[in-house]
Image 1 (cartoon, rainbow over the protein chains, first blue to last red):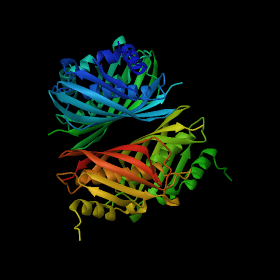
Image 2 (image 1 turned 90 degrees about the horizontal axis):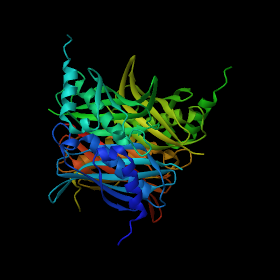
Image 3 (image 1 turned 90 degrees about the vertical axis):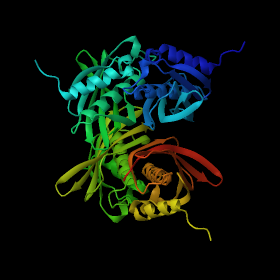
Image 4 (image 1 turned 60 degrees about the vertical axis):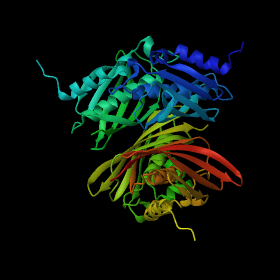
Amino acid sequence: MEEKSPHRSLVETVLARSGFASTARIEIEAVAPGAVDLRVEMSDAVTQFDGFFHGGLIATLADCAGGGAGATAEPMTTRVVTTNLQVTFMKPARGRSIVARAVCAHPGRALRVSEVDLITRDGDKETRVATATVTLMAVP
Amino acid sequence: MEEKSPHRSLVETVLARSGFASTARIEIEAVAPGAVDLRVEMSDAVTQFDGFFHGGLIATLADCAGGGAGATAEPMTTRVVTTNLQVTFMKPARGRSIVARAVCAHPGRALRVSEVDLITRDGDKETRVATATVTLMAVP
Amino acid sequence: MEEKSPHRSLVETVLARSGFASTARIEIEAVAPGAVDLRVEMSDAVTQFDGFFHGGLIATLADCAGGGAGATAEPMTTRVVTTNLQVTFMKPARGRSIVARAVCAHPGRALRVSEVDLITRDGDKETRVATATVTLMAVP
Amino acid sequence: MEEKSPHRSLVETVLARSGFASTARIEIEAVAPGAVDLRVEMSDAVTQFDGFFHGGLIATLADCAGGGAGATAEPMTTRVVTTNLQVTFMKPARGRSIVARAVCAHPGRALRVSEVDLITRDGDKETRVATATVTLMAVP
């Protein structure tokens, strides 16, 4: 039996304790040190007026994945808070699910920066629909 | 009996047709041409891990209010989509409710820009906890 | 004879020691605690291809004014560095001069946030052409 | 003799006609369709108060490279203007030169998005010091 990594445990704990992450139906897809993939399945609960994934849902997913990547980057910090969340939308977010792939590009002591690709999936097809930069402050 | 303004009707329609706006429990506080205030009450459904309003919820509120302000600015457009959502977090978002006050600063034909103040309320006390800029493209 | 305020002295010192602030021809218009106005006069040295003020010049002006407002906000810090510079362009920046009016909206101990209006002047006419948010980290 | 590509010609023309690009001492390093690298050598003209590359210079370089990548992406447009310039600074920008590597991630008809890595060089050593997202509107 594989033991759960401390990185995955951290992401699970933060998501489980965040009411809005459950409300937004965010699920963990993969966790590695400084790299976190989160996913939301399409449903009526997450749409904007055309039936695509809502911009706010995409921002929420980016924030959670970016925060997770920042917190799990070595050296791991117990706590980060987002200072800046910048999302640039490129295409309508249609698909069966949407994944945020976050990588921590700068694991600084005080400041951490994660870059996030937002990708919709429809069968085998993946489409990058948005990009986000999440700036985080490590909380002592 | 006061008739409902076309601006308020537009915001109501867009929110009602957006599943994630309901999921995020967004309510209308005030609508004027180019100025939209939206509100979310505190509950377990909208928190981050410390029990404050979640950053994703704040981004969602900013996006909806900024979009509403952009769409209702004169000349009214039937449709806008967000191209850039930038949220800068200044303080922990604790309070009984949080309000997004959005004003359209630039109602261009192709591009619209809304500025959004995010304010928490606790009794009589209001605290500005974040600021956002929402860039929108008018869809013909 | 009026003595120079410590806030103005700080802004003067930082600009004088920053080669690129001179290169960009930035001049001080007004300094108060947490509020700094900087100006650039139109010339061939600061244009983009249509002869308007260049986006990079506008970003530079926003960065310097936002940094100045952040550093001079009480309690004054000796040093700040920019972590995020976000500029949203609304109109072509034509005019005889351009002014950045920066106010520090959040003078935190670790993190400071300045909001900047970018305004062109042509005779008596002022036009807001861009808006910027500058996030700063106080350096101990 | 190799003929100059229309992509390189476009970037050369835009930079030559932009006074502030010369003022900021921007040079072309490489141009391919949708991918533009620009460079600035270290000198007293481009510094902030510690002698590193100035944040405004970095923003200017990102804007020019991101605009170039957006304009040269297929189908080529004759004109783009920046609507959003977002720069996230990660490390002090020390080095002999700084390069902006821009790639157009979304060459839309109306809207284009370029992602830019800002990299300092010191001998053989390259350090990524900042990241930028440039959103552009194609002008008919």
